[in-house]
Length: 249
Ligand code: PEP
Image (cartoon, rainbow, N blue to C red):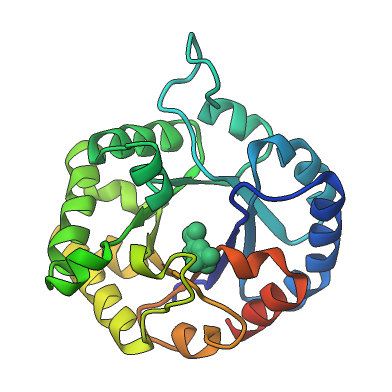
């Protein structure tokens, strides 16, 4: 039985005041959903604040990225070891905004995934196709290649301690959501592909859906057999909407 995981990606948003209000507002909904894990991924600048605010609560947190190096002359980067020290449980890796806006290749994503696990964090590996690839029926091939790049470097066994997030790029921040049927089909394909390497690992790994999940569509998406939770951007910035999604899980 896979535990539902509802994770907010705050992206480049927030102030000290809004972070405090959001975390305090989420404490009761997170505690009430005893079978669901709730996590947020703030900008790294708020990690110290989030660590303090979430102490003693049911809310876990992670980073939106991590460097592949532990330390050294890498100006502007954040090491997974530092993120671990600040209490992160998770680190997103390979988010489509990193892949496109920061030119992160499959090889870089795989190296980061390895570094994140080596530091004792759980990587949330984001994969998904562009609109062009979706329309060309290339979704399966794209997600397979993105998974294979990590399997080749980290091994299939590493997925026993990782989360996969299927995020069709055309659905992120666009208000367009994959229908529950489309999402379930891709999630099932991801699990079947992983099962081709190791069935036990594939049965255990949580596969989250991301892409304009909101208070109105979450229940139907989360009801699908192979959708084990959500990675939520815009709707995770509002206590009421995110709480509704948590309750739907
Ligand atoms: C995301 O950035 O991971 C995401 C799914 O964003 P949104 O929910 O806003 O589409």
